[in-house]
Every structure is written in structure tokens, then in C-alpha cells.
Amino acid sequence: MAIVKGSLVPNITIFDREGSIDFKKTEWHMRWMFERGVDGLFLTGSYGAGPLLSNEERSAVFKLAKNVVTDFSDKYLIAHVGCADTKSTVELAKRAEEAGVEAIGAVPPFYYKYEEDKIVQYYKDIVDGVSLPVYAYNNPFTTRFGFSLKTVEKLQEVGVKGVKDSSMNVGFLSTVYYDAKLSGKDFKVIIGTSTGWLPFYYMGIDTMIAGMCNYAPEIISDMYRYTVNGQTEKAEKAYQIMMDLSKKIKFTDSTIASHMALYARGYEAGYPRKPMQLPPLNDSKYKEVKLAIDKALKGLDEIK
Image (cartoon, rainbow, N blue to C red; front, side, top):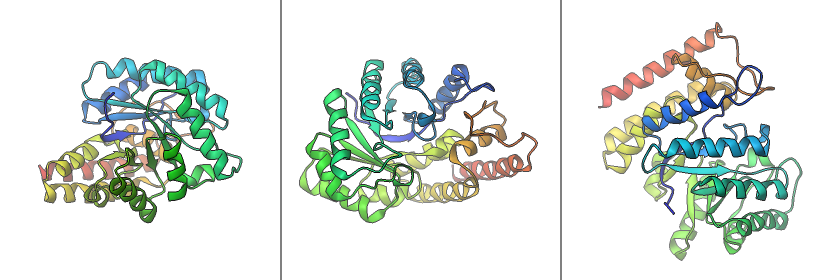
């Protein structure tokens, strides 16, 4: 089993006007990102409308991604399977394993508030249900539960192999990372955003799952390549470009912004699933997004 590493994307799932998955456009988008250097997909997470999909629809996305990835080398698939209940989550994890992904990711059960022991049992049930590495996804903004080092230690005891973290809590992340490193634990820490990439890489984290890959994969791929190749000055310039664009794009929900940014770049990017909706295509915001992306890509070219 390949070890997940590099710049991955929480890729959007593209829908048609009626709200059905547009598999043709979703496949195009996956290939488009791979061709621009993205190392892997984090399927049906928040960007990918996981909570808005049925398990059958999510399974279909997993199978689609597996078909796509066979045409590329050294690419990874992490299937996000988190649901509001344990039974659905475990069933989806098994389907993801059958589809041939490299790893499983899952947020804690959401909507209701659970004590820590119930969260740990939920992850134990996932681990027991599959033979793939299971990564716990710490996203307290959407799940009403935030991990602590104590939580992570309990997850390690039941076999969880890593954590994807979107909290951007430096104290938490660094504590978890160094605890695993200094104790010799087989436990991977992945940052769930490109924000903070450079300082976290210098600490020792080698994998990010970056939403910007949905609409500007060139920026993330080049930034990652410069970083790991030791081209520090270029990496720092690319990082500044990424951070500047990120600030300009964060004016609405990230899934909607990703669709809008693709349209701004001239791509027919379909629709999100309702109740999410895009502004009319003549909205002036698309022009602002295009200008921001054009400036970022020009800056990237100047680094080269």
C-alpha cells in the first residue's frame, strides 16, 4: 500500500442543473488537476459535498476516481466516509476499500454532540471494518467536536493511523506531531489546508490537502515542488502568492468559490448541489476572481 504524501485536493463534486452528479465533468476536473501536478484526491469531504450525497452516490465517486487514477502514476485516493451515524460510515468505508482507494478519512459523527468515548468507539468501528489506514479528520468548525492530544492518543490505541487537521491550531498540531515523532509512533499528520504549509513543512509535515488545487493547482503544485526540492526563495515567493490569492477567494463558501473560480478561468464547472447556489454568471465577482487568479499565475510564472 502506497504511503500518502504530497499535495492533495479535497476535490469538488460537480452536479448538473437538476442536482444529479455530473460524472463527465467531475472526471474532467479530476484529470485536469492530476495533469497540473496534484498528487491525490480527498473524495467526498466538505468540498466534495459528502454530507449532501447518499452512500450510493459517494461510492460512485470513489469508483470514478479509481478509474481516473489508473491513467496516472503515483497518485493517491483518500475516501472521506464520515456520516452522521456509525453504521453508514462503516458501510461506506467498506465500499471505498472495495473501490481500491489508498486510505480512509472520516470526520467524527456530526450534528449531535457526543462524549469522547463515543467518538473513539466510532473510529474503532471504522478501523475494525476495513484493512486500510484510517485517518481521523479534525474539523471542529463543522462537527462540534475538537480533538485534543488525549483524544489522539486514544485513537492511536484503537488503530487510527493518522489525523487530517483543519483546525489550524498550531499548539495542537505541533504537540501531536512531536509526540508521534519522539515516541516513534506510526502516525501521520496531514494539514487540511495550504495555509501554514511552509512552517508546518519545516516542522516535518510532508502532506497537505489544499482546497486551492480545485481551481489553481499550478500554484500549490509548484509551491510544494519548490519546498521539497530545497528551493527556499522560490518556495517562499510561491507561498506568498498562494496566501494572497487565498485571502481574495475566501468571500463565500469554499465549494461555491471553487466553482466560481473555475468559471472565472473559462471552464464550464457545472453546479454545486442545492441548497448551495452560484451567483449569476454575469455577477461582477467572477471578474474580480479572474483578475486575482491571473495576477497569481503571472506571479508564479515570474518565479520560474
